[in-house]
Image (cartoon, rainbow, N blue to C red; front, side, top):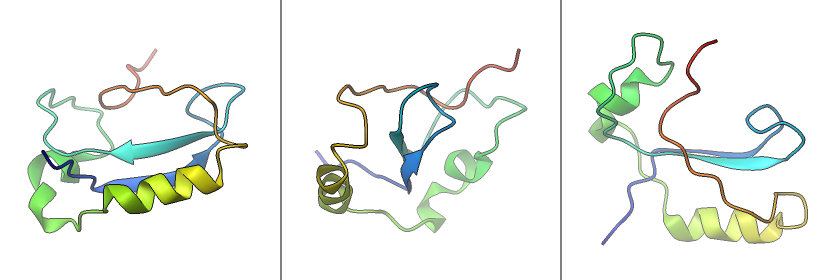
Amino acid sequence: MSLAIKGFVESSLIEWEGNIVAILFLPHCNMRCPYCHATHLVKNPNELESIPLEAVARCIEKKKRLVGRSSHFRRGTDIPR
């Protein structure tokens, strides 16, 4: 099985309060939220270059002291409040 990674943010301070996290963007979400900021991942994922999982793993390994020790997976963005 291959994992299609279409976007990668090496470190973010705004996704999870009090933690530095890395963010993977995966294609083919079926939610179709009207406020989604990543519609290109839903509508045209094949137009985006895939990022090898090995490259992501190397980056996270280098930053493992900064990036949190736990993994957090979620689909899409937070629901607006």
